[in-house]
Length: 266
Ligand SMILES: Nc1ncnc2c1ncn2[C@@H]1O[C@H](COP(=O)(O)OP(=O)(O)O)[C@@H](O)[C@H]1O
Ligand SMILES: [Mg+2]
Image 1 (tube, rainbow, N blue to C red):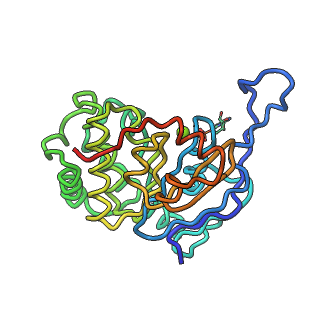
Image 2: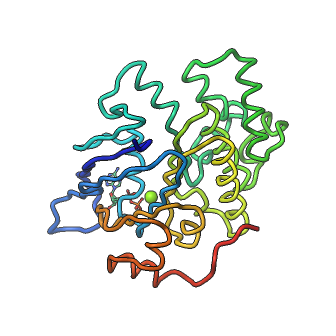
Image 3: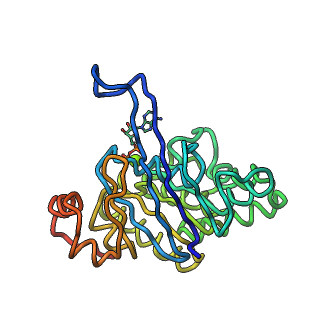
């Protein structure tokens, strides 16, 4: 049984602020009948140009965006129909890392408040235990625990991303959606974060849905790659197969637009 399975997920946004002007219905089919499965311990890379529906799909599997139709199963549990205690348990197991995870938070929050907040929300542990756990995850992401008493703006983009990862890890999830986690970072800082994510996957037995528009990074991290175009999943397969023998013309065009540089660990 896969750890995560999405079946026939569909989401249409009706937007007054559509970019396409007159003549359109004002409806965007952001995700159209997408089905995929992710095995425990693997990284599924999700690629596609901007606006293809990657973020919407990532949030739908976590139930951060309500699906119009379809089903999501996590470890056999029906995510979209779960309620009460079962939903709370599922939410602990499934976390997200954003492009700038702490940039969207209250700047008056200390790093400790940021990292501890998910534990406070879920009411886990005593205050002292939360503090200890926060220090533990900070070390796991390569930060000194003295950082806990400081504020996000005191840190670089790469360090802020580490704080965001610590926050995502603090409830000991099994599954993480990483939505363009290094897109806002320069190449060398980004590669450190990519390698951190790889290390954490081993240390914490994590399963990733890794969203990116960078083929070299996805090729480096992912066991399999899924390709989205205009809300549809046009191709999915082993990384080797997708990158050397793509079947869909859109995948070929994405690869053709990819510089020949290899992503490497530095
Ligand atoms: N909250 C929203 N309201 C209206 N349209 C949205 C909303 N979120 C996303 N969209 C639209 O859905 C499509 C897919 O967006 P998104 O999932 O963000 O793509 P990606 O992450 O691949 O760039 C785009 O056309 C986008 O404009
Ligand atoms: Mg996106």
